[in-house]
Image (cartoon, rainbow, N blue to C red; front, side):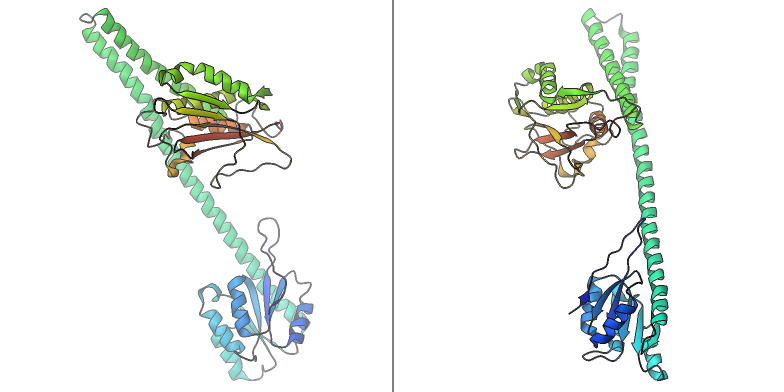
Length: 409
């Protein structure tokens, strides 16, 4: 059985700690080499035979193998040949440790099966350490290069994604601005041609259409300005002690007429929740959550406003700092829900659920603004589908705010 300790690869600012595999059927030889290498900044794994060594290479990422040539079962030549024929270990450097260096034929055989070097027995401590250090340093450089390549790829992917998002954003904003503007211009042109023939009611109706388009245009511009300020950290958060339940009651009262128009039943469930937050901005988030739930709920259904603690799905990045207590708020409806693939992207700019976008009258920026507000509170926001098939939108924020870490100014 293998004996030793498992190494680790520490990336970033810490040094990489490579693992070395020692293979010899004589325990004393393994112990001797381990002692020589004890100060070499490597982790040692020991094996007493070829088959065991092959198994270990499947589980570890070794920097180097020091292999005895003459062993029972399978010798060092055959073991190395098998290593070199396997994809995951074909580039693993093997140094043969042998007392038979005078036999040129055997030396050439070793190189032929894939060995990179030889060390003679009895082992010279200085030679062993220097040769191991060469391959350990090569291993570290290779790992650091791999890490750098991964970071470069990630940076490239993020840059490409940012470019795509920017292009999509510009395309969407152009469309969203043009639509109400075309409507305003169109109604004005029609009015110029037909104003003399229109009755007073027809004039008022067309003026109302112009007003609606102008209101939509103003709403879009205001949302864009809000989002731009939030994304650029150019917003001051006014953190004060508030009660989330009081804020929820205020939102419910402000939207009561919409609830009554659809004969919906609004349930506010939970005890008062004292929290330090920007009351106006949290009210804005709750209003968005509830207005969406009202908009997409069939008549006569229930909408639940809940303050129960409920951790997000595993797909959502969520972390609570040690000693930090969070409070939760959810709006749960009985509507059509959100397709699984859209649960994360629904918080992107100009993104609306494919199930609801044809009925939606919003700008497509509301949830993106909500996300920025909650993240500005040091919190987390997410969407999921409720057990009843409707949508569930939730945010959590710290009960107490760390003023030096959270918020913008």
